Amino acid sequence: MAALFPAESSSPGVLSPGLSATWTQLEGWAAPLPDRINGPASAQATLRLFGQSEASVRVTLYRDHHAWCPYCQKVWLWLEEKRIPYRVRKVTMVCYGQKESWYRQLVPSGMLPALELDGQLITESDRILLALEAAFGPLRFAMEAPEVLPLRRLERLLFRAWCQWLCVPHRGPSAETQAAQDFDRMAAAMAEVLGANPGPFLLGEISSADLVFVPYVERMGASLAYYKGYLLRRRHAAIDRWFRALEERPAYLATQSDFHTHAHDLPPQMGGCYADGSPLQRQLAQRIDHGPWPIGAPGEDDPETSQAESPDGVAVALARVLRHRRTLVARYGDAGDADSFDKALRCTLTLLSRGTACPPPAGTAAGLRSLAQRISVPRDMPLHAARRVRQALLQTAALDPVAAAAPGHPLPLQHRRDQDPQPFLVASREQA
Ligand SMILES: N[C@@H](CCC(=O)N[C@@H](CS)C(=O)NCC(=O)O)C(=O)O
Image (cartoon, rainbow, N blue to C red; front, side):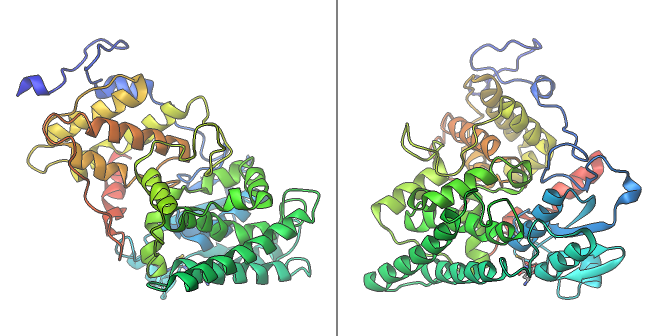
């Protein structure tokens, strides 16, 4: 049995092929904690000051733990773009677990987002933005400016056309084609507005109008690639240009998810997402789930992002996994044999950070594959880091000496309680 397990390396920086690094070595290679309070925006931040004093904070944003709620993303982006100091309190969405009772006392419906401004509680994302505009001024154009109102209506029409295409099951090919054309026409209407401006944004420079479109257009791009084989950014150059301009902005990068996360979080939220089963759709879905990433053909633009990985991408990915390593071992390992998954995770991180392949203990492939399917962007880490971690998990699983092909636990379609944040929160409190 011992021969199946990689030995542990004892030297601080050098690894022989097949050896797994120790936790101490891995910690030495991880990126240091970033300055979440005054540095670039981050999904993990709970206080943002933008160089101001803590006493200046007038705003608390209540948003979901999962960093998935589209209405929360809109408000979150607005605060970041305007550089308004704020606190974050995170709440569980019903789809992921039990809603916190303290939040139900504050907001009986349990709906997110909510925001406290100078002690006043406000719900409904558009009402929140109006209140923020009244207190801090608009983000270039106000939500009710005559330039913005027709764009907000266009966003709703685009949203409806997306739902009609994505979320209606079992219709014939001609109705499917019609729904695709209807969506494409609405996307073309957005592209036309973008094309009418000299700048890349809807009204030239970034404004509240763009923030209204961001959350769902991001979800449209991801879900239509996965379920319909339709690449929104390739199809509409002006929308690609808009995303490229957004991806130059640290505020957007911190809130941006990826195709994999959205493709699997949307079905329970939307009441189902339906694949068209075309060869292109199946090929893209396979790549989104199993890589390799980026999912485009070599030499083509990456359909998910225009941003190259940062030089410390691997060290960031490593730091994010290390933060939760004990909880990950407890959740994805075999209850009676935590040691095996501990080693499997170290093998994965050794491959990730040193490029040294390391066979995991026998029988750990299913846990590694389950974890690969549950890395969530931006909740856990940024897009490029998630690709690295998923790839290392899948490559390590394939080296399992007895169960190399074992599949991971399937992702649920009706809920995502497999993503319950509670165990991670308990562990974070214990570490603090
Ligand atoms: N019209 C509301 C919609 C908010 C909404 O639908 N929020 C969802 C999350 S995206 C929610 O909180 N659902 C309850 C839950 O999932 O726990 C707004 O604009 O704020």
